[in-house]
Image 1 (tube, rainbow, N blue to C red):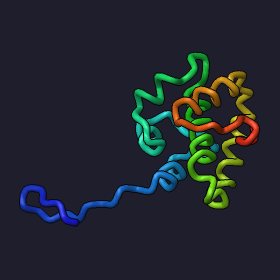
Image 2 (cartoon, one colour; image 1 turned 60 degrees about the vertical axis):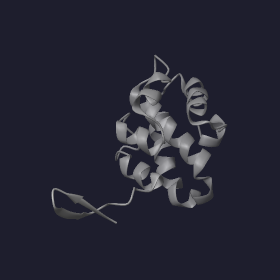
Image 3 (cartoon, rainbow, N blue to C red; image 1 turned 120 degrees about the horizontal axis):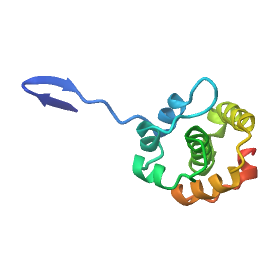
Image 4 (cartoon, helix red, strand yellow; image 1 turned 30 degrees about the vertical axis):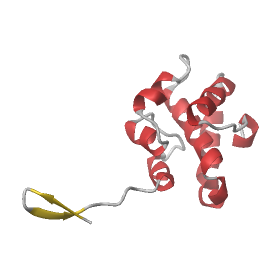
Length: 123
């Protein structure tokens, strides 16, 4: 498909696969930033993602837990493609000693429409 912008012919880019988008957003440390691109990959708006964030939680912890829930809830059929990055994310989360993991998993499940258990995430 071609898009014409002021008489220039520009090929349109197909939308990026949400899994590839999510993978590309993971930081080298293993966490994700709470950014508009992450919300898009999760199929949500930034406002939706930020509104359900528990008040006391760090933004990176929230974003990382959301990413793990999404992977387990929507991409379990291709787990072999993302299990290593999930392990890195879990290691990062454990190092943060976050006290509100259970609360975040519950809120994340509500936001994403999933029923992923904390234990299934490796937390």
